[in-house]
Image 1 (cartoon, one colour):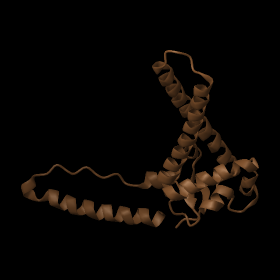
Image 2 (cartoon, rainbow, N blue to C red):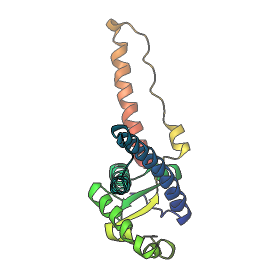
Image 3 (cartoon, rainbow, N blue to C red):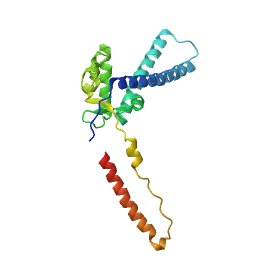
Image 4 (cartoon, one colour):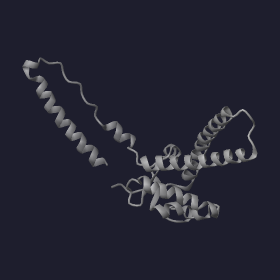
Length: 194
């Protein structure tokens, strides 16, 4: 297994800003749909109690969208769109996939760090693995996403096209055997590089 490279704090910060901007756009659009739907069914202006209830519903909608966004992306593929853009991923400490339950625990850990105004995440700046409170709680860490180097991608041979042959001459069968051998050697070469 390749060594995990801890993501730099600036990458985490920019990814969080991108995710926050995307989340805010989704929440704004969803909130506008809710408000338009409520006003569409009403013939009179909202009373104070109804307006407070609508504001509370929009706040709950934002919280639910945040949880679904982070648990869905981090639990599903280990990256939110912001992390994808910056080339970082959330993994367990052993490098395995996070899964939905750890992603939910990590999201709730992030919410628990809000009362400290972010001081619970100071470990991101001062520890070797750059783990904040949410990472510590969920047993995760943020690392650089593994990418296939460009040189390795370029060296992979493309599958040759089969020669035109007469089926009765058996040329097609010899080509199939040689293709299987090349495919096996290509797989072995790729696994050696990984």
